[in-house]
Length: 77
Image (tube, rainbow, N blue to C red; front, side, top):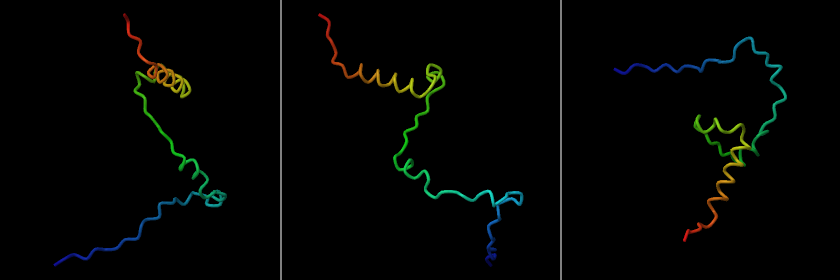
C-alpha cells in the first residue's frame, strides 16, 4: 500500500522583524538594459592578478599584446 504524500505549504521565509514599509519604491526592470547588453567577466589567477592594480591596466596590457600579435613577423637574414 502506498503512503499518502502530504502536500505542505511553503514556509514563509520572511522574518517578523522586517519592516515591509521600507521596501517600497523599487523599480521593475531597472537594470534590464545592462543585463541585455551583456558582460564578459574573466577571473584572473592570483599570480597574474598580482601585476595589475585595476581593470584598466589589464585592458591596456591586453590591447598592447593584441597590437604586437597583429604585426607581421620580420625574418632575420
